[in-house]
Image 1 (cartoon, rainbow, N blue to C red):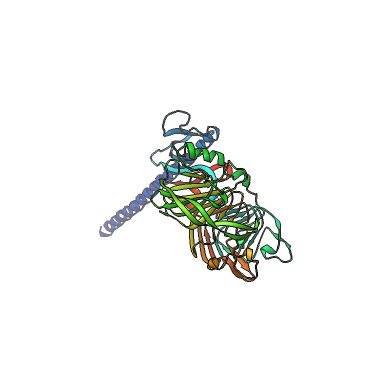
Image 2 (image 1 turned 120 degrees about the horizontal axis):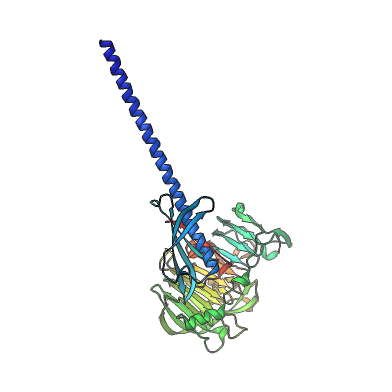
Length: 476
């Protein structure tokens, strides 16, 4: 009797353990099945949300000015996603907003909330910005051959329609639109030699790509007539040509960091001989001698465009997104320059501040620039070049090519840091080498593109393509 009782107890115990294990396994299997269904529902919701974005991109391609889905009513708008073989997959709830400046669309933000038709309890939300790619997506965008010296540290994509000698370091892609090019003595090649699209002693050669499709500089050029009209009639700021000899006058803009800009009329400048590969030896009028106050203005938030129909000097701290244009559409023989006369900083570094400077002629760093200089912004030299020209007081040069003893200490500067983008039609240069050492310009240069400006550029920043696409895609 005792042995039979023990056996029964053992059987009952094992059955209990087995039942417990079986229950646990069954529960786990059920939970995994439920979890798998949830994952499937979430994936369907994500694909539905993406389909909503793609639908509205298609809609905008056909109706570019309609952000109300053809309804004339505010959103969100519901879009059903069908599988031709499986019926309804899910739905997308689409919300659309447009960012305007001077009454003109700059970009469109689209948010899509997707839900699975099987179980709408697990929505997914994706958002993207619909716009044309800005030139701010590049650290440098050039239309000529270029030499990046060994002192250069370049962060961000670097592109040229010409050949590139890259002796500096780069941590992003470097693109050339040519397969080969003729490298002459001005690029350190003697005798003139046929070189690959990109060559040099730079350490980032794994990121060099050539040839690639060229970028049409004529296509990205600013429409100065339209921009002038916006500044005059849509709420921007406009400053007419200064009277007298324009080559020695213009406007000095000092940004104050509080959303205002102090404007001074330049009445006289010093003149100096300078040299560039684009123009050779010229007389430059880059240093302000006398000026008078015009006024202090609040930069309009809804049309942050300042159009100067003359030369312009710029410095200060930028608050908000601002674009300055220096162009003269009245005088077809005038191509005003812009001067970066001092440091240019942002009031905030979270992407809410930004600066674009577009010059019909050149964007120049003058002789009396700071020894240690920092500039933030997107700098566009539409027909000319960006850079600091060659200055000298070396006695081996003719007297008419020297800056004179008063200004000789400014010839060589220490360091230049650029945070943003340089777009130049002509060859750039901020450092000049004589033999093996710097004899004019900045001895050390650091370049970094501003990714925040690439997805949210200041108004009317030129585009590098005519095609619209999604930028800043993210799941929220």
